[in-house]
Each structure stands twice: as structure tokens, then as C-alpha cells.
Image (cartoon, rainbow, N blue to C red; front, side):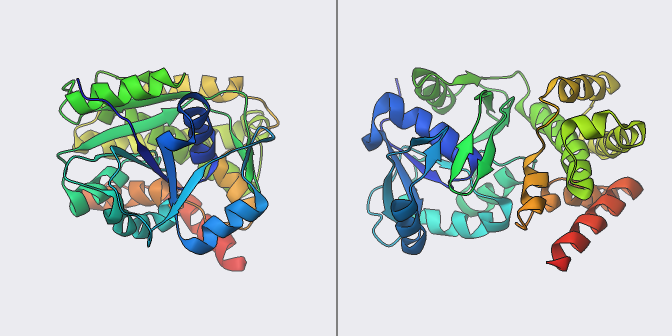
Length: 305
């Protein structure tokens, strides 16, 4: 039975901090190494990293000092720095290292496969968390759950080993029947609500109490539904309704990570959502006017900084 004894984490955003803290609290700091460049590590050590106000006692290692491969590498960077992280991670990846991207969207696994092949690549999406990152700390009430799977739906030794590792740390780790559909459905949600909250810099409650913005969110999601079909993925209308119900159930004063990025003048991951939808629309000759407009507006906001 394969066991995960040492994991590496690349990226300390909201997800990286939240799940990294959970892992070291249960296994100890020696079970997880946070990889980063020397300058970033110095900043983490000087300023501290906090989860719900508690310091995270992470063990850090710079890329230059990396000497041993990890059993599993979790990528939790922003997509804007993902390509660089993939290249740097070669220092901790062996032919047996399991690779998992915690990034949203449907493209990061393809990026990893182009660099390292897909032999040890697991597909993943994270749902249900309510993390808010401010400075070097993250606050949250719900850890959500991690969905992982093999592209072909098999229950491989790697897949079961990672599930055991995460569940042993108290995390909810699920293996859905179709992980690719799971990823597409989550991207559909993000393409709608993330972009609309970012453009208008609104909370969940402000969007969902405004019929025009609720309709805009729905229209952006329907364009994902349209481009998914020729890619072999069927997203039902009921899934859109279910996501809208979920948004209505979220704390109305909270907002998406993309809106938080806009408010803090951080580069967004719009290319993962609307950008992907637009590219697939062009590929299949399917119009995506709503996403065209949302992406343009977000890029204009970013350029204004």
C-alpha cells in the first residue's frame, strides 16, 4: 500500500495556507515543505503566516536548496505565476512524485502534463471553502472539500494514497465518479460569479439581490455550458440552478477571491475563467459575448492600476 510521507506545497495563497496549516497540525511540520524563492521565504519568516489568527509553523525550503523529491507536490499558486512554478518544481519532482494542482479551471493539469507527463498526475478541484486572504493571513470557517480523481475514472494506487493522506489530516477528500465534469462545473460557477463580483466589486448578497446581475451571472455560466458540449462535457441547466442556490446561501457580506484581488490591485485569474471560455468559443465557433465583455472590463480595471 502506497503511503505519502512527505508533501511539498508550492504557493501560500488562501488555499495553500488553509490546507497547509491543516496538514502540519496533524502530521507535524516535517511532513510538509513550503517551496518558494529565498526572498519570499524571508518575508514569510519575518512577517509570519497566519490562519484564523494562529501562526503557521511551516518548514520552508528555497528552490536553490532543494535536494530531495517529494512524494506529492501540491500546486496552490495563482495562475499568473503557475508557469514559473512548474519549471522551478523540477527540483523536487522524481519519476514517482504525484502532482496535484489546486488551481481552479480546467487548464492547469494540461500545463503540468506538458512538462512532466500525465503518469502521476491527478485531477483536482476544491469546493465549499469560504476563505478570505488579507495580507499574510487567511480567515475561514469552512475548509470545504477536495475532489480528486484520475482522468480515466480509475481508482489508482496514487489516488487512494493521496485520499488517505488528506483524510488522515481531517480534510474532506472525495473521489467523484467523473472528475473532469466536476472541474468543468466548478469553472462554470467561477466564470459567472467571480467575474461579475470582480467587475462591479460587489458582495454575493449585492449580486444576488440585483436581478440584472443575477441574470448576467447566469448568462456567463450558460456560455461555459455551450462551449463544454463540443468538448464532450454536458452541463445541465439544473447545475446552474444549483450553483445559484449555493451562492444565495453564502454569507451575503462576503465576496469572491477575484473581487478581493481587484480590491487589492492584484492581478486576477480571469484567463482561467472567461479567457478559457472565449478561447473555446473561438475554437468551436460559438459566440461568447457576455464573457467577451466581462473579460474586457476586468483587463481594463487591471490596466488602470
